[in-house]
Amino acid sequence: MNTPLRSRTTRQIYIGSIVFALVFWHLIATKYFEPAFFPSPLAVLKSGYELATSGELIKHIYDSLFRIILGFLIGSAIAIPVGLLMGSSQLFRAILEPYTEFFRFVPAIAWLTPVVLWFGIGEISKILIIIYTTVFIVLINTVVGVSNIPINRLRAAACLGADRLKTFRFVIWPSTIPFILTGMRLAMGNSFATVVSAEMIAADNGLGFLIFNSRLWMATDHIFVGIICLGVLGVLTDRIFRVLIWRYAGHYGATT
Amino acid sequence: MSKINSSNELIQNKQSRGSLTLRSVGFSYTTSRQQHTTPILEHIDLEISDGEFVCVLGPSGCGKTTLLNLVAGFHSPTQGEILLDGSAITGPSANRGVVFQGEDALFPWLTAKENVKFGLKMRGHTDVEQSEIANRYLELVHLSSHGEKFPSEMSGGMKQRVQIARILANQPQVLLMDEPFGALDAQTRSKLQTDLVQIWMKTKKTVLFITHDITEAILLSTRIVLLTKGPGSKIAQTIEVNMGHPRRRNNSRFGELWESVNDTINSEESRTSVTA
Image 1 (cartoon, chains in turn purple, cyan):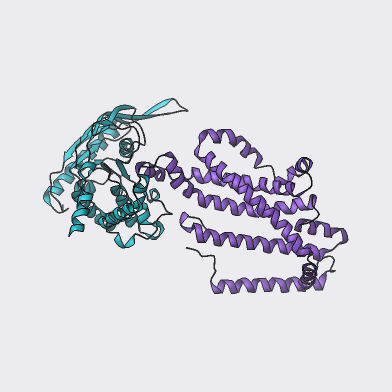
Image 2: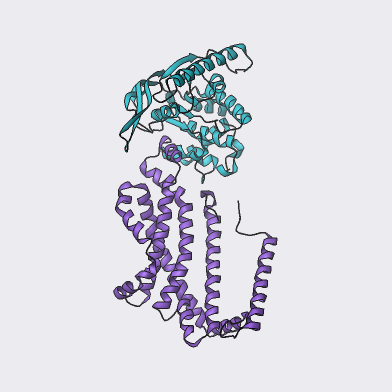
């Protein structure tokens, strides 16, 4: 089984690759470009340090993460039970499938204006947008998870004496966990993308706001700080997710 | 000594055996698109008495597995009826346990022991009982020291042993086995066949065993039911296997039986290929 902890050699190659990229970036940026056009890693680090010590960066990170995590958790909490119901009941599936099939192609950001119109410019709108983006990804993965349960596993449960309810609790639910977790991982990635778009259009804080607002005075270094923060936060949350999956759901067949 | 006695008592529970009656059972399915009915099984009349080991043998696609699914209650016969100890079968139940060919029937998030406990848990046994009974049946299938392993950590043969223990622990009246050793390598299969015969002699369970392997059928069963080639398979012949255990393949009776079964299958093949 793959552990999320990589071997020492792999980690060394990882670090070597990052160092190489940074050096390459530094050489290209300082040799060929104006700082306002393409800032060097040192310039970005300096701006990042200034933004961090002033407390501004932490505030933006906190605001974005708060929206992502809250929306993600509420979205998952809605999607998992509904997905389980849709997966196990033909009736539920027939009622809801037209909507899930339709709305999953409509990106959350397309809803931004109506949502702001209806719910105002505040936190609620942005969290709703994240919930929306999370719901469809987790929901569809959950439904797929239920319909992918091997028929023999359900039959085995039946001939071991499990009724419908027990089959649901002791077989369908644990069989679906890996699919739900995969859906949640994907949804987390989408939540990052969505929060940035939402903050660019309708916010006065958050990493999306930092990135978009910095264009007004050509603070390209600030934009790079925002971009790097997004990447690092994304990798970190995904890592945490992977460790949790590996630790608690390895035997459910979840891959990390 | 007292422990062995009590475990034998438990394993040979007289209450938990049963006889099966299939009365002119037929099964066909209609595809919704073509309105066309395809017969799978026709006029199956079969009486399996308490403690018998019956092998259903036939070419692939002859409806062997369908027959087992009907007895298990996963499908309902479109004609006729199936009775267990005189009462009609209406759906799957713990009194008819199935050992599947595929390992996907095990619960991968549960250890071997937890898999064996599953049925007992469903049927409301206490934790102590579950654990005690599971240990006995793991011992019966020679997996005592592997109870804490997950299916992903076990070989194909071990997984089939878990399936057998899991079903037997539940004290079904009939044991249904759907080509349980079909996906195993020859050596493992041979070992499991020997062990299954021993388990059967210990438990005196009624067994309905599906296979396409003539040798396996002769090695295991008290009676072989030969199905004709599909569609619309019928019983071509039933053959009594009057041999004691352990059975040896080099025995002359074994060879004669093998030839006779093989001839019957071949004549079936040529008959159907002429009409086809």
